[in-house]
Length: 530
Image (tube, rainbow, N blue to C red):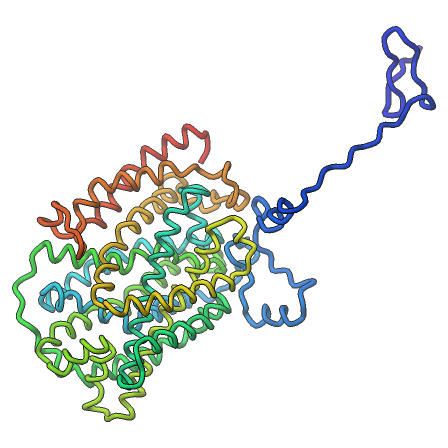
């Protein structure tokens, strides 16, 4: 006797009743799955899928668009770059992108603050600059390895510590810092252009010219940025050498200054730290297309470290020398009051080279700032694209336009109080960056044990799978207990800083690192995973 096995077409007999045959059974129509419509469908089309990564797909694209991509236009925004798309082996451009960015006029007025505003001697300022530069170039250069190894933008990497939502806090600080650097660079470039003919070219016009040219380069994307930075350091360096050769004979006329106190040394050190450490929020943006298998990590690290260090230290010290000589050179002092560092450079060049050639060299000096603005504008656009999930599908070029529209008018306003804007900006940017760099570095080294593969592309935009970020934000907030009393800004000096000088950056980095260790451990135990 065989048993009857029910199938989809034959139902088992009900208890106490006869079997229902196939011919008697009424078919049950399948219910169609509801599809999103209206605004829900629109939002779904904008929001990237969970774990969606970048794919270079040219099929189905218009011919003109494919030609742009073939010419080097960057299509991707903030989506992770998988290993097969990381094909660049030009590791030297990780040196030139930062070397050119910093081989410009911007470090010179920064260095001038040491002698002109703080009253330090050239010797003390130079030693302080050298020590803190050697030290604070290490964190951003180390963090830059993450772009190559993970294929993630710098603030996307930060999501694996701060979470999908709380990462907005360092995101805003980083965007503000990059915007500040762009503002200062645009002002310096505008001052140099205005110095060509102060009666006809206002500083505002020079600022607009600087912003427009930088916009054009950053619009094309990372490859264009790397090509620009790869070659433009040559005229930048030649122009700076000519200027120093022409005006250097006056640099020995330094203003007398007493030996530097520990407080002044620490305050200048905080300025230098703020100058370098803040690159930690963007450095990986320029290495995400590099192949991690064709070069050692040490080689890549040194490319970025030397790219930060080599142009900056000599130019910061040159600025300190110029700042010490400005009070003793009436023409330099008057020019500095009118058109800033551009005017000083014009005075250094004109007596030796004559009107025509000196103006050409001054034009090169003004254009040297473009590399700095371009790098900042590129990363600002990426930061804006990370603010909301839907922005990931908005073309990157839209945010470049937004960045330019913001920077030009803001730079014009900041130029009205140039020295105050520079001092206020450099005095505070190192604090948040100290917290941020400490969290990101400790997450990689301690909790992920240098395993870049633990940065899973499948969860980069999945809030429930990323850490909540309580440990990262909590450790950063805890550091404020010593940052605030240890900071020394033009508008506030804490009780500790009155004795020690500005130690806000050191407190931010050290205290955040110490507090993040137990807080992140508890967070991992609570979640059961990284």
